[in-house]
Length: 151
Image (cartoon, rainbow, N blue to C red):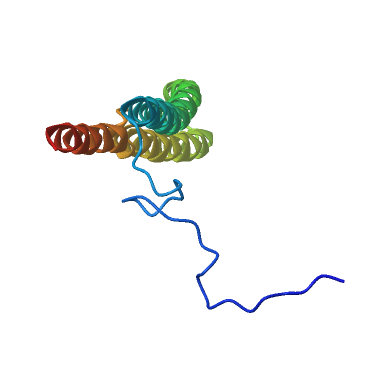
């Protein structure tokens, strides 16, 4: 059977350094600080690279969607040219109402091509491909590091 001794709260707590981390009542040595700075800097750089990769990937995906919309616009315009050609040929050759139907179909395809082109243009302009968030955080981190080194 072991006896438990009632101690006041915090009596068993270890001494802490200036940062509040347990260190046995002593300050950290210079090699420990340098090691900590190197580790923190490595982690920071790794996180910044990951953020940049995510931003660039999102920008490229948006550009790909825009390029796909331009491709759809090209296909729709191609069909419009075919139907416009058929309508012109029907109008000139026979002068019958059949050409009116072909013109309506061609008009619909031109409308689809215009909408797809506008959509594609919006997607191409909407999302920047540069990692702006990463650039901002790198600048902040550089300023922080400068202030830490000046202490």
